[in-house]
Each structure stands twice: as C-alpha cells, then as structure tokens.
Image (cartoon, rainbow, N blue to C red; front, side, top):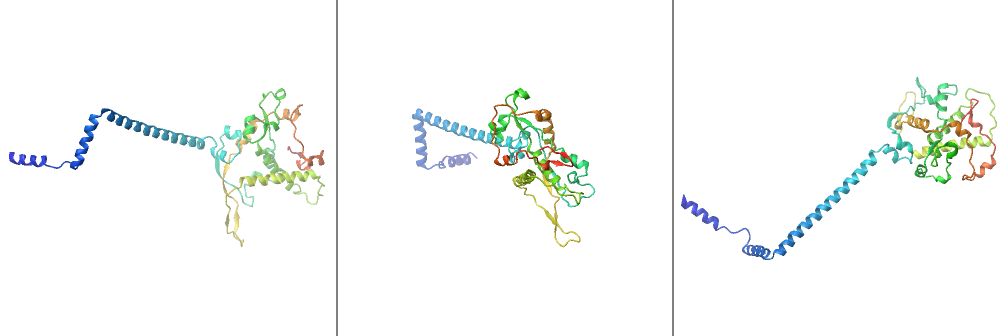
Length: 314
C-alpha cells in the first residue's frame, strides 16, 4: 500500500503546471516585480478602486434618472383628469373637480319610443323646456390672472371684477364656462326650428338682420365645436324589415364626461347675478374696438332670443 501511495505521489509531483514554462516564468516575474515595486502595486489597486467607484456612481445616476423619469410620467398620467387634460385647454374645473368618464349608449333612434330623451320634447313640454332653459343661466365666475394666461388669453383685455364694487381683491377676472354658451346656441336653434310647430297658417314675421346674424352665429359655433372634437366613433348599419337599404344605427357607444359636474361648479362658483346685471363699466378701463358691422346694427334687438313669449338670456 505504501508503495502504491509513493508511486501516486510521484506522478502528482511530476504533473505539468497549468501554464507553459514561459508563462509560469513571466507570471512569477510579474509577481516578483509587484513585490519589488510596492508603489506600482498600490497605484494599480487605487486605479482599480477608482474605476469601480466611477462605474458604481454612473449606475446610481442612471438608475436615479430612470426613477425620476418614471415617477414624472406616472404622476402625469395618475393626476386628476389626466386623460381629459391631454385633449382640453386649461380649465380650473379639471384641476379642482374629478370628472369621470362613463361608457354611455346614446339614444340615436329616429323614433321616440316609450321613454324619449327629455331633450327631444316638443315646445308644449314643460319638462323639456325647463331642462333646456336650465342651461341658459351662464353665471360669470371669477378667474385669476394666472388662469387667464393659462387659457391663452391676454389679461389686459379681460374684464376685471373691480374690488370697490365686488370686494374680490385685485386678482379677479370675469369668465364663464363655455359649455353653457354651447347649449344656449343649440337651444336658440331648437326654438327657431319649433317656432311654427302647431301654428299652421300663421304669417312669418319680418325678422331684422340681427336675428339672422344670431342664427348664423349659433350654427357656426356648433359646427366649430363639432369640428374641434372630431369624433372618431363609428355608426353601424342594420337590415330592417320593409327597408331595401341598410339603415344606420345611430345609438352609438361613447365615453362621456359627467356634465353634472359643470352645473355644480357653475352654481358653486358663480357670482351674484343680480349684482352682475346692475354692474356698469368703471372709468379708465381698457376698451376694445367694436366690429365695423356693430355700427350698422346698433340699437337692434334679436327677436330670436324670444321663445313662447319669454325673453331668453344671451
């Protein structure tokens, strides 16, 4: 046994080293050189440590930048009304009030059915008239200079609530929600459309020119709003009995804003209307020039504001 062990030990001792002889000599020389030159060895270690720290710092900076960018992106898309802000101009409503979107099936059927939308009521419908006319109350709202600038307007041209009359301070400008002006224009067209409903044989009055200018204004405004929204939704078509051609299904799905939030905002932030009606222009304010056509129709009144004998607010 001892002889076998001795033989094995001899074989082990006679095995070649992992490197070639030259490499072994060179490696040994390098180690001896480092041992003989401690300053070189110290510098190599110092240089290695410096590279490690630089790489570590670079990784930390890159990681930190990525975290900041991710947090900024997350904050942008997680803030209140983030989706609406992308497709809207600045509005304090979107900053202060959550306006959820709701999947809504519009009632686009041509026929009234058993439960028609209140907006389709005829002029003799008290409920329909009340629903439409509830939007006629615009209610001016005080805005700040910063908000006016964010809306893309020049504060120098916007009417201010003078503090001596309103007591709102020196940073209060007159604004109103455009939504209610849009519904007002649609209501003008509605009243004009139904003006002679159930009045067959009546003579058409001779309207003055300002009446038709107002109708043109409302038609133009509604078209501009439709063009601005440029709804990309689709109608589909159905085969209907007794119809030879495809008939459009206009009851489409939409992502709708909660318009009740705008009504609540108007009522909560609107100034006193009685005081507003009695308010007259203070002295020394900046005035803009009237359009040349104004002078041609000065003093005329738009009869289109009258519906069922009642004057509607502009």
